[in-house]
Image 1: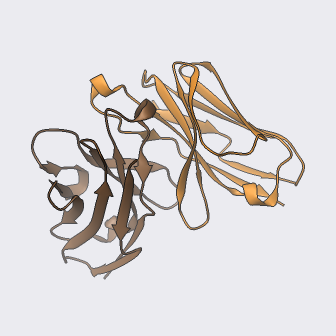
Image 2: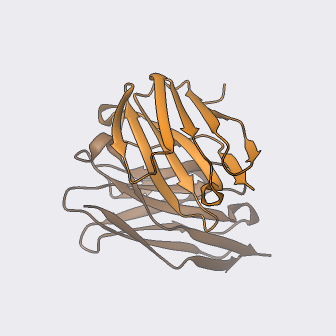
Length: 115
Length: 115
């Protein structure tokens, strides 16, 4: 079984500040990990993913995440927040052993960016 | 050149009615999904099809019936609509594990309101 916990349902940062969204996962097999972003009234869009290889993954819009197996974490960061980063962010876990590539999603974190 | 499209975008109907939502993807993916997102933004998988075959059927009332006429299309029919069915329904597709690892591409969503 797989699960994802996103710590903090709401995160607020000032424009230009560091963005840190936390994600911890549980998986009995090597995981595939994903971050998605959902802007208001839109579908989810892939930000970045980790499958194998380099543990520091770079994504779109300046975001990156680091896979830490020892901590079972996959936190999302961005050095400097922009107003346009305000959105809902979802962490998800899957694996090559998962039925039909089913992903388990976290409950989401709402990011607010203050001017 | 929309990747995953859904129709309609908005659907307002009365309790007891039957309605359908259609989804099409032009990405050549083998796997397609239906998700329900409630008012708190929680995302719940409902169904998954792989090459027209039902793979995942989560605990969803029998009033919901998916149908995949071909691997590029996945429709959702809902009978006897209830107030609790009000939500945003997302269609998604994903490539095979060999193609990179199960990231999902989401449609824009269908906002269903049952009155």
